[in-house]
Length: 191
Ligand SMILES: CC(C)(COP(=O)(O)OP(=O)(O)OC[C@H]1O[C@@H](n2cnc3c(N)ncnc32)[C@H](O)[C@@H]1OP(=O)(O)O)[C@@H](O)C(=O)NCCC(=O)NCCS
Image 1 (cartoon, rainbow, N blue to C red):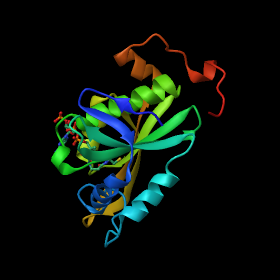
Image 2: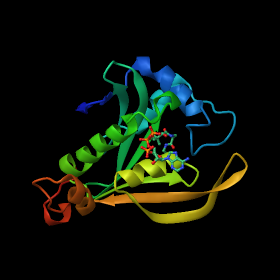
Image 3: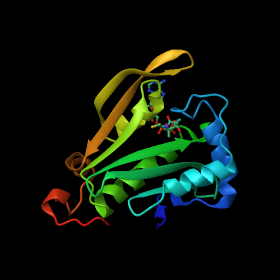
């Protein structure tokens, strides 16, 4: 898995030295959206196992590292339909919110998915109380494509499960590129 380099952050493979920080992130109920079972029990070992499960020919996970070498989160993708549709997951620590890191990390992974992997659709699963994720996704051009009402409970309050997606044509209409052809019009193998 290659590094993806931006102006503010680099996306690079996760190292052993990152595991402690990433476990703390997963155990922080303010950043951990989906698993609200208590007590949060991630350890460096379980994070490593999760990374291994999320790494393969059609899925991957990177650390989000600032230009001065500080890890601030992770970002992942999973081609749910190979070369057609990929979901994205992202978490950054609260100390890194509002600084443009997550936005650039998302732009880097979108460029990878559309321009290198030839995806037709990028999507993310989130929750209605994740206002920062929804705000960021909207800024990137994502739209809400489905809502599962009151699908989960966070802090005693019902929250909707939301799918937001961005189509290939929508991506290129705002970013521009030479190659706008849909993967369905090209011969695409499983890799
Ligand atoms: C999602 C996450 C990676 C976004 O990173 P971030 O640094 O907070 O993102 P940004 O600051 O670039 O964008 C957040 C946007 O949310 C919106 N926003 C922020 N607070 C808001 C509020 N209270 N109500 C409505 N919108 C809000 C704004 O549009 C804001 O962007 P702007 O201030 O530049 O206009 C980060 O907040 C995070 O890790 N959250 C916890 C985990 C999570 O929810 N992950 C996603 C699960 S799918």
